Amino acid sequence: NIPHAGRGAFANRFIPKGGLVAPAPLVHLPNRSSLILYEHFVNEDGKWKRNVTKPYHHQLLLNYCFGHRESTLLLCPYGFLTFLINHDAQNPNARIQWSVRQRHPEFFSSFLDVWGGTNHNALSLDFVALR
Image 1 (tube, rainbow, N blue to C red):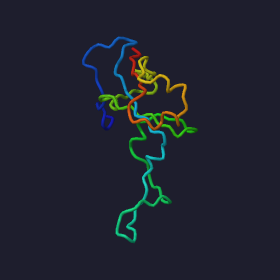
Image 2 (tube, rainbow, N blue to C red; image 1 turned 90 degrees about the horizontal axis):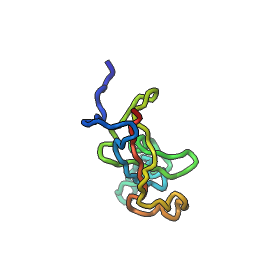
Image 3 (tube, rainbow, N blue to C red; image 1 turned 120 degrees about the horizontal axis):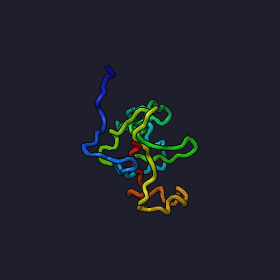
Image 4 (cartoon, rainbow, N blue to C red; image 1 turned 30 degrees about the horizontal axis):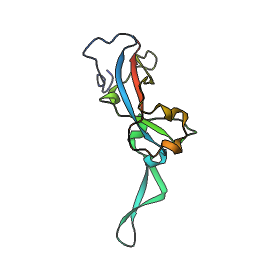
């Protein structure tokens, strides 16, 4: 018995190989440091302040985002129930790929500082069936 086995997304219809399992619009976070949690203290005015010299953890959202160690950018899927999609790493049943329909495809060839401050969905991923 595997603890918590059986949790996840299950299809209630046949999805052929290469078929779309689910779309996943992406929230872009231009600065991954926004997910750092810091210790807090009460200042002399009686207000809570974060102590930026004492980070202690990261927001759980970080576990569900895509990024690169040499970039501050994080891309976080927020599609309906897509956070429940999981699979065996040795025998996956779905792949993740860029959606063929992007709201702002020009972002792929632009610098982050040009579009990072936009406050709407711009890019998307697709979960595609492998078998």
